[in-house]
Length: 294
Image (spheres, rainbow, N blue to C red):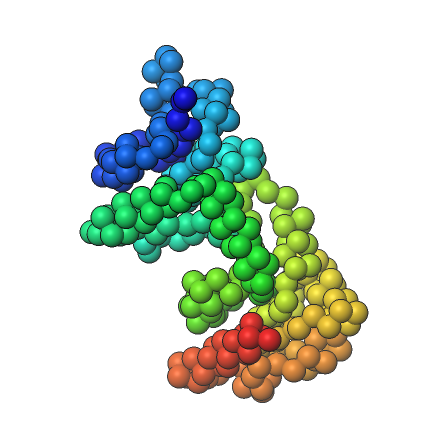
């Protein structure tokens, strides 16, 4: 009886030889065979039809997403489209794309491969039904993902410096997987940006508005982002949190001034010293902390 196959998606460069060797060491003693595309290519080349055939014939896929290698992401995307059981591995400290957090992820440390990769993987393989285990873990993680709150940030690109500092204060929430901080920089080249913004606006639990004269002068913000936010706030109670960055006519705007700003409009961030600005960012973080604990 042929052993079921695990298809390994991993960069081919020399930097990942130790990872490949470690995984091969574990699989050799299991009830699975291990293969990757360069081992099944009949002509020495790496072709899409051969990748597809190898993934289709596999029982489980293991993918190393460290460094975000494009070929890895392509093969992983194909495996996802086939709804294959997937175990993602990644070097500790590397960013995990938001759309992959619903998968079982094994984080390894290159200085401790025995403890962080070999032993955990061996433990997974010893389970009675590894494939079922991976699927059940994906379902459980998906439930947790559904609890993640999207925080939408509306801002003028002239005020990016303020967005960057806010992102630093909210990064711990992202790392802990309790919020998805959505800004327009997450839109990839070629994506339908209006559709992506609408999706983010619709699913957001909170919208942070970084308000300045540039914000109020932005046709895109006023015509595209604010109307659905204001409508959702009125009809569905969506939370809106203004942050006043610079002197502007916020209090004269009948639509925006009804929302309580995190800081006094008479004392915008631009008039504060560094410590006072940091205090405002902390207040925003505390507001979000109370939101995610509800």
